[in-house]
Image (cartoon, rainbow, N blue to C red):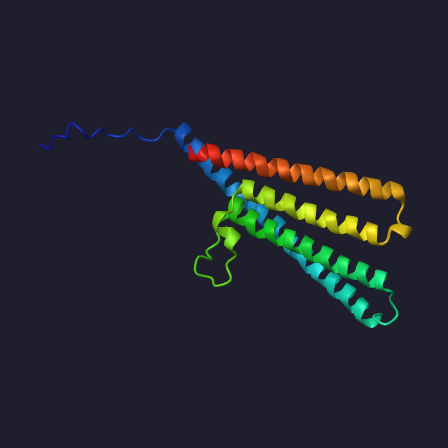
Length: 185
């Protein structure tokens, strides 16, 4: 006759409520995959931005000789703007997918971005805020370069929006720094 050891306690069979709870938790965890098509859509948007970049570049090449320096500079700033938005999309796609949907198996990939090693929602927010400040800066610079064709009221709003983005980015970075300090203690 076998005797169960004193340290071993038999576990109770799972109840129906426990099985329902486990199923619900699996469903909740699996719901993260609902975001996958959203990231796929952002990839399509990034492809469209690449097409817009190439169309703008082609326009600049074709009309190079007849454009004034100001128009050429505005074209270059537009290319920078499109590139920065594409960078923002890449950051959101890679960082968001890796943070919220599934781990990316890129540890040995030679082109793995450095920022991906410490990506978390706080880091993504700060990078997004910094990107928005950069994009806003380009729009503001375009307005200043072409100030004679800009509505002064629009320039005021662009400055206000830019300062709002800048203040938000500084606040997010400061908040993240405080949270990092608290985590270390």
